[in-house]
Length: 167
Image (spheres, rainbow, N blue to C red):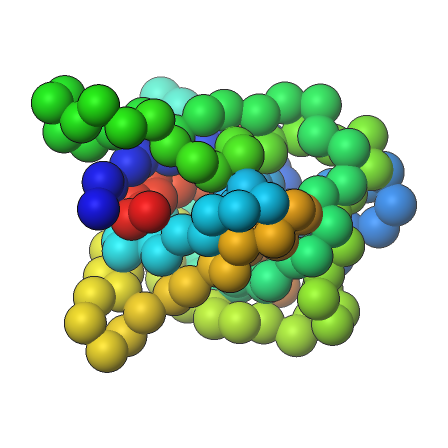
């Protein structure tokens, strides 16, 4: 089983509102499985970058939501193998980071699969190993979306995420 890394940065001062139609609002990433291969998230590292200034102290929450239709991605990045000796390429369709039509949540944008809160002057490292697994099943359009929920980020602040996956 190969391990891959995907990274994403949100828009500056990203909203805390749910996505709607073509407006991503708090949505800043959707890691999409392929039609015949799912994945397991093994680690998520979240942080805040505030440019040249000290981040404003504020509590934020990032939620994960299952999706079952990809939407229309206008920007996507491919996962990279963490081991340079890996001959396998990732089967993940991509980490979508911008949309002309947002993905479709499995139930609703407010039904979170997982959520974590932290202060903007810190970060959080979430391992999902052994019995604590975060699984995205195979199927075209299936994915796990990353949302800023609750508070909007202050001006000039962005969310950063590094996501390790096994396939």
